[in-house]
Image 1 (cartoon, rainbow, N blue to C red):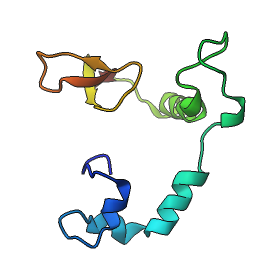
Image 2: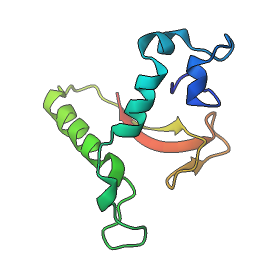
Image 3: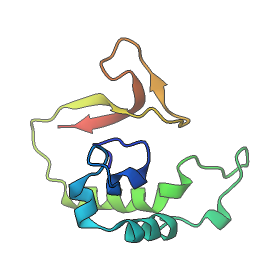
Length: 117
């Protein structure tokens, strides 16, 4: 769903061939997807700190997932001599606090990440 952009996530299950994605609709039916979308969370929204508070964290909702990924990456990474570190921009047009717009780049708006190759 991140590769093929549709006006609505429901369009992946559309009856119109122009909108329908047979790969996604063949993997999971729409009712299961909606159930997962509504019920699966990686953090508790009830204890979310209010914006402007002392303990407010912009990335609170994904903090547990990020922690698991970081520990997994550290556990499985095998270092080599040949490495390159570079800044890359991930295309993202929706509103997000840390989105950047750089008019001289091929991907003009998104968020920056550091990548190691």
